[in-house]
Length: 152
Image (cartoon, rainbow, N blue to C red):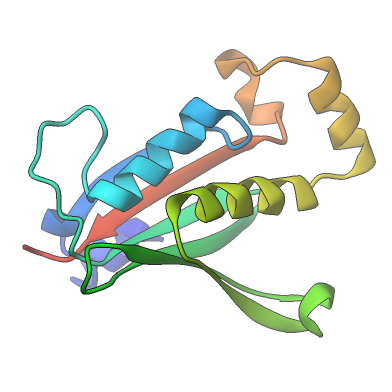
């Protein structure tokens, strides 16, 4: 999807922040995504923070894609919206947009979102197996995310 949007000049390559992935329930893996959303650059890069710029991410999880958008506020704080275009019974068969007013709320929402997608057999697998990068293709916790920002 991203290659197509870059090729069509809808997402310019200079706005690409980075990609991350791993176990969505693991705090260190989740932290990498959230840090990129907050700061607008990869955690291990020494770039100037762009906290006042909009940042967006595509989160690939459980054969579905949701969007996360950072909305900067004038006072230096920001909101995060998780947008799921797939109709859900929990919201009357409609798409949903959930607003988080701080980082902790976003992390909690992402953990809840991940947990809500697991079947009973997947929960049994998670309970019985530690995360292993070598077998992540078969692990229900695996996610991948691509992050983009406005140009400074």
